[in-house]
Image (cartoon, rainbow, N blue to C red; front, side, top):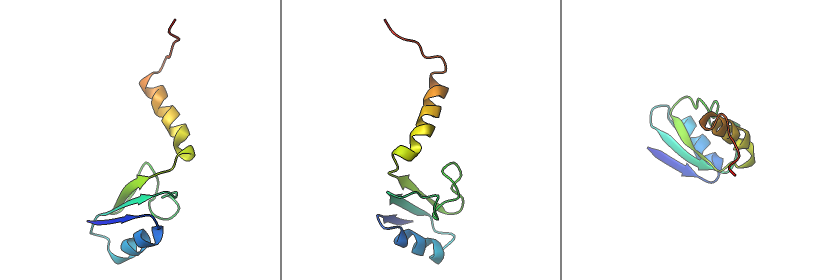
Length: 75
């Protein structure tokens, strides 16, 4: 396993170096902009964790709606 963090150049170098060794990254940038195919389907031997906050809010709301499909007010 190759672990990278911070600057995405290290992750890109690892991606270019191997297609068989698992690569795990932690990034504050958007990983879809060059590291993975999409947030839902990463593709290849690369996976990781992103610190995106605002960009993931719509997905968080979608997941919340799936868990609590008919929210009601408590009195």
